[in-house]
Length: 128
Image 1 (cartoon, one colour):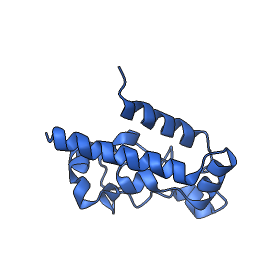
Image 2: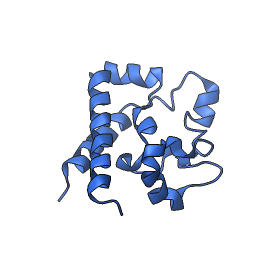
Image 3: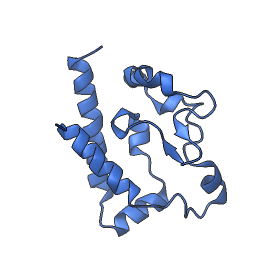
Image 4: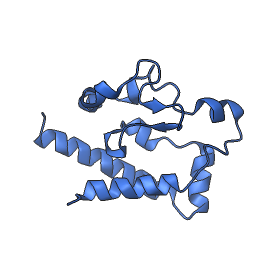
C-alpha cells in the first residue's frame, strides 16, 4: 500500500510532467544542455543536512552528469529522493506554464516543503 508521501510525490511528478516546457524552452543553450547540467559539480545539490540522501543514492551518481539524464533531460532519482534544491527548482517558463494550468506556485512550494519535512522525519526515526 502506498503511503501519503508516495501519493504526494506521484501527484507532483504527474503535475510537473504535464508541463512540457523543457522541449519548448526559448533559450537554445538550456534547451540543449538542460537546467540541471551542473548536478555532478554540485553533488546533486544536496545540502549538508541532506547528506544521508546523497549517500543512499551515491551508487547512481555519475561523475560527469550527476543524477541528471542528459538524453531525457530529467533526474534519474525518484522525486522523494531528490535534494530540497532540486525539488524547489523551476525556471520562469516552467512556473508560468504551471500557473497557466491552474497550479499556484505557493501551493506547489508547500507540497515540496512537506515532502522534504517528511523525509527528515523518516531519517530521524530510521537513520540506517
